[in-house]
Image 1: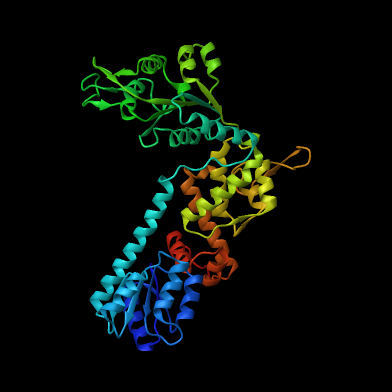
Image 2 (image 1 turned 45 degrees about the horizontal axis):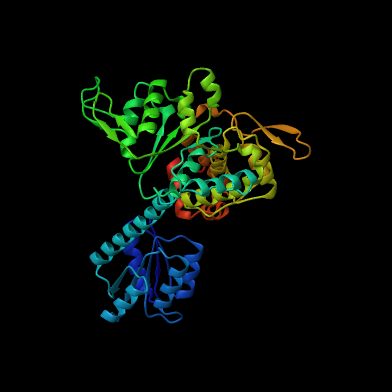
Length: 466
């Protein structure tokens, strides 16, 4: 339910607008002066403001300027009984969505409100999408190993040298590959990624080199392979240690001759591709076992970048965790939470078998299940749902095993189901703690009251009376 604020010093206008908008199922607050309106805008999250221009304590244009300085994307509809073209133009220049004259026409008012809310939603969605896709995440940390990786990227990226990136799952190999591309002379061309472990061995050649129509049973049309798609750009072969030997032979030929042939085709196609590869395996051992070609290994391993395990650079965890905290809170549209010093120390003591990827999931879990400040007890409770949590004591490396307060996690089929359950139980606990005072609970957990009402409805929460 959209939340609207009316700022107008005429009681009759406020009452009329409120009645109309509440009838249309909007949640409405109203005040009779600009300063009180600005205070509400700073305290609550509104989707739209309707503001009179001529008011006693503060002019509506001043309210508009100050509000947009605090919340630039908040749509404003200005209202005036002395409307002129000049006034409408001035309001538009200052950032107002639209201008309506008094007394407002009902149909025009509702259409304008709907359009302003739609625009506000689009602006928010666009910002979220841009955050997700517009920029490659920074390589976070200042440990010696990370500094060395950054320096190597700066040196190697502008060249055409092939790079083999090694490291455990979740350590950030893909991020290194992205930055090698971003800082290369091919940055304006595509970066094409192939997860060799995710593609069945019988399909990997078709995926890499494409195929001609009719070349095998399911080849109902011609397909362009990843080498062709990456022409002029960069091809990132992730988990190359899982590639079949027959596909390895074709990749080797492509690297040697800069030519490929589609499966089932005879024509040779020239390709200009820079290849980056990554693996979590020891390729020298794979060569000894007969699972990887030595000649391909030497072709790929012109430059080697090893990404260390997170436990080898625990001094970077505070910076990484804080960055994840900020990004995830913004993604959820909630105020950014804080992590206490003890909680950060506890995070640094965990084994991190899943590396940076596990840390990201852990921070998301803590954001959902913890209060405004994430404590050491939160880390202990939620570090290893369903089992024991190993947290170092920080004095000599002794490890103390503490049982998570959350158990029976086998009942959840996926993480979203678990999150919904945890969120429901958390909100239910807070409501009961505050004797079902919704306003107090919303302030306590730092979300909008309208948002809390939506959650109560979503989870079917009801007050139990004796």
